[in-house]
Length: 274
Image (cartoon, rainbow, N blue to C red):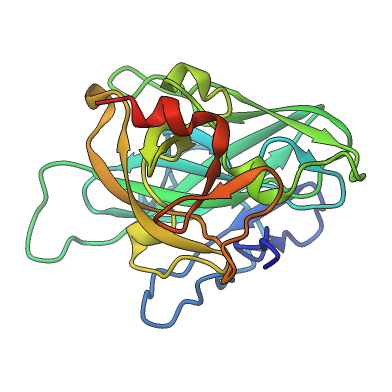
């Protein structure tokens, strides 16, 4: 059986002189960026909160936080997917994650870049992957560190990441990333409940690879998913765990006719929507 690779994600650069804060700065060159490892710019000093003196950089309040895996084993580097709307004339530069006492605070930083083709009138939705770094055993709250002012989107719901022992009782990574649901309220680790084949699983509202024109990482493939509740969106392309060449899947996941590894328990339920 093909091994599901949990390291779909970005490499992470530690800040000089500080081992508790990490910066994820993804490349936006879809023509040269690798699918499973992105270039990360080392940043010697993270600027203080708020806009820079010349206004060329700002903090961006997040709209949502989605944990990629839940729970996560000790010794690994779990990641979150975050979504935001950047103002006209700005693009994301990096996302900082800083650890406190059983809390990880996220801060998205954006950089001014004149829009192509003239002025824009509305902000652009963006999605980013951010490393939470290695966390000790416990229940970690993942929160937005940027204050939300009047007119900003509501503060995103804090998400709890359970960091557990890496032992034989731990389910395979694909299972911990492919979480079944019947409705979005079931997605306590973030995301939208979406139909994927015959099942319903929690998915980030924007895929962090395909949205930026990249290929799905190893062990996954792109399929169309659709929000169970039409009020939460329509259909989009997303990377999900793929069956191996023999039709096998990790753990309790099963290979569906579209060759995706999905939870068996939700197949009948997911197929009944719509």
